[in-house]
Length: 397
Image (cartoon, rainbow, N blue to C red; front, side):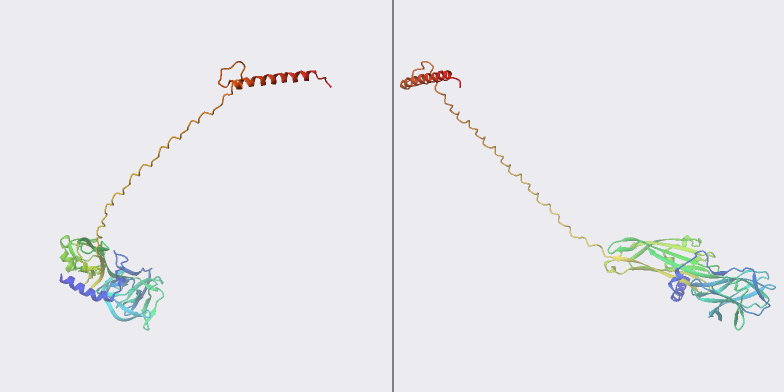
């Protein structure tokens, strides 16, 4: 547990010097950063001469080692150093160094720095060697655009054949991602909440342990359980406890030559109060690569918003409206019209003409008028007969 705490303290110093892009992990299974493969061209000397190859760091992290493609007459020990540069030339002093045995036949030789060097992305550094015996460093013709092969001169002169030596650089990096499973929670309620930490460690064989640490959680979050896993199977299941994660997993996770991705899932309950509204709940986690002499770490933060509960509106009194009295309209008095009195008009009195008296009619009390009518009729008849007779006798003219 103490080791985890020390690693965390070291991380605060290192992280303050390293920009946030430290967390950008390009290749989680290898810490190979820069390289140039030799093409059979060799540059040799009888000894006591410095050679250098400059390179541009592609990552923020710890330069933990380099590979050089060379040979040494009769075999023997050789020291490789890292120096800063100015105007593209090595300037010294030595920033990191390591010794390794070099064979008489050409091949890749690894130099592991006991104290890795913190490098800055896009900065130029130099690999410098000083063979004490006849040696050859193999390379290629101008195939690495981020640097140049040099030989000690006044003070350095560029080489053209090879223009670049064969080399590989290894930069150990670490990344931490932290995330709540909900973007917001409501004050005044108990809410299940999950915090997931994903820690990616990219390094070679130089590291001793990986560190994992849960720095802080909101006071209203109560962790109740944890699950742990990693791609290199370095985490012992019995070590997967909240106490260990809270104090630091630094001494519990051995490093892996192929790197590792660690995942921690913390379950718990959130119970914020109204006083927490408007203040995001922040958690912090920290991943480290631990070496014998220092650690290199990366932090991450995650927040969840606390919002007020929606006010419950007073129930709208949905008064049952009084039933609309659909008054049955008084029946329209379709008064049956009084039957049109189609009064049968009194029969037109078609006065029956007095019967023509062709004989002695019925007796009447007005017998006097009948007596006067008869002579007149006889006279009219005789007059008509007379006129007719006169016309028949008139001669035809």
